[in-house]
Length: 459
Ligand code: HEM
Image (cartoon, rainbow, N blue to C red; front, side, top):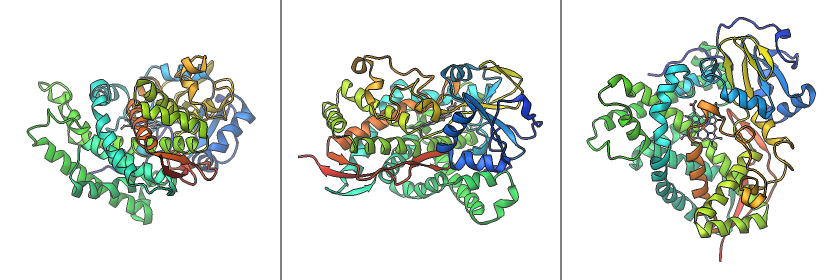
């Protein structure tokens, strides 16, 4: 059964109030206005605050006006990512996701618990395991893409969402049974749909009796029921060691002689919900922006089709560069956050315990000093042999965060994205009929009009 208790948007509950003078400058609007501006208008707010206050600025968020200090330089990013995990807690900053993902979620844990969980989950996303998922991604992508009509125009985000949901359900759960997939799909979609209003409302548990909050709880109860049924059934399967999906790998992870070293059912549930939610719409959004950008640049499209046709390691490297540039120009997540557990110096600033700090991904990706000609879509930035310049460091290109908390699905989503592009581009020419801009969709950003494209069969 899921735990539903009050959560803050950023920072830890019950922390003492930090006086304004102890922190870098920032707007003096009420905390509610700053919170709404941060959640709804992030694409305008980060650049505005950067212009007004410079490299580092403070926002005050509800409840209680807790501070969020955002940094915009590579040096600060490097320091935050390298920060001692005992001091720089990420779970506190992600606390808003607690009611959905559960207390054991990798995203919410810190310290030894996080270290243990990460050690158990990570191998399912590396090396041999990762390579093993490619053919399944290719199969799901081919089935989706083959269904597109010649000359059809559509919101690519919608199609990519359908595709990445299918991929994540099959890779994570290993579910192929159509009846079970049909039951899971709407529950996962409804969970991803949860908007900032619902997340904000979670700080006030009495709201859960009403309207959308109540529907969220009902959906969650049903999602849990399906998850636990799947876990129970897998526990009794005799071939779990041979299965290649993430759930089976997580069940087999750890030392069989040390039961406390293995994930129990509640932990499995929490990690599975986390993977389903973190790994689905994020990748879909990156892919839809990539298709949109290729649809606007015929020369790049031809080059990408040649890479897809070749299908060799150089071709896949190009397609991966297309995705990386798509995530650079259109960041899916606006910032990464850590809450300081003790007074700490960050990038030359002495900050009190309880302050939440983080690099602004939005600002890091759009500064000329990090990415020359930042408004242009140029995949070759990520291929030094083509650009003649160094590839961007992991302190300026930060769509997946960094350090011990770097997204565990980074490799997976690049592999998945390149494979999906390959399936699309070997079959279709693409054009993008209209301009699009980002809009906020709860934690992530997505193309406002869904990154519409027209596809025509290649002759
Ligand atoms: C384009 C796709 C994706 C983007 C942009 C993205 C972005 C991020 C970011 C910014 C973080 C926070 C990192 C930090 O705090 O330093 C994160 C964490 C995480 N992501 Fe992703 N992600 C993507 C895809 C995925 C996929 C495919 C999965 C799994 C199937 C996944 C699972 C996770 C998990 C479990 C964490 C928590 C890691 C930890 O705290 O140890 N993500 N992701």
